Length: 113
Length: 112
Image (cartoon, rainbow over all chains, first blue to last red; front, side, top):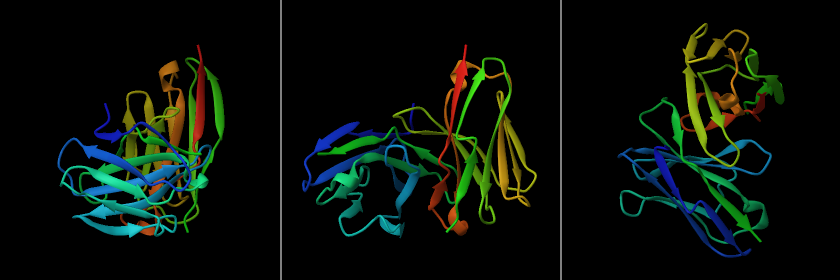
């Protein structure tokens, strides 16, 4: 069983719509990450989140993306205006402490039509 | 930026056979992580290697880190159908926190 639960497992949306992907870690951790994997390509880093702030982000994580932890539990990734090229698997990950392995959720498959 | 190259890209082996997957980094490795992914699912952590020469084993899977060669290998002994999946190596880009980069993966199929 994954130590991180992601919802929904599959999301279909129309281009230009906003989507929110959710991640619920089973235990209380401080380090969270979002990664994505476009079909047939590498798993790519999007953003890291520590102590309720973004600590690092990649070039992919532009102004269309945002993350927050609104209720101290759920960790969300919002894409404001989806594009076709946003179609991918999005993975949430948590880390117990610095430089320890990342533990991934099962992902949300986002399809933008 | 750092790149991880995995070889082979795909592998088909007969059940019971041994196999090795390699991961080579373009830059100095500050630790190396191995994950397994089944199609359409998340990444499952297998092993973490942090020191040159380090070797770790879990069940029939052994991973080694050669820091000088900037390379790691994953060896499976007596493969089983349950070993099938995509094996990914990951490393922190330049040692930065959180920015774990991955290789393209090696797809392993095990024929019963």
